Image (spheres, rainbow, N blue to C red):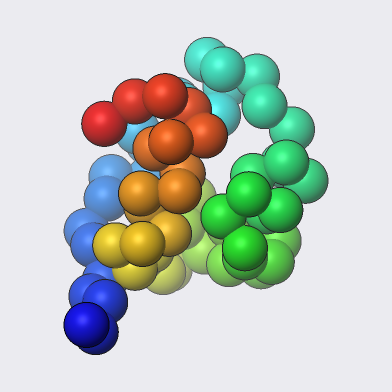
Length: 63
């Protein structure tokens, strides 16, 4: 099954990171991305694929 990119408001991602206070290196490791990819998501240049967003959600225990 091919994954697809998901439109996610970067402000929601930033809010999740700030609220749960999980370090960036933990996000990068858990979601299997690099720092540049995370920055692209947070600053509207990129979008996560569905599987990455699932991993992010699981890490933050939110949907």
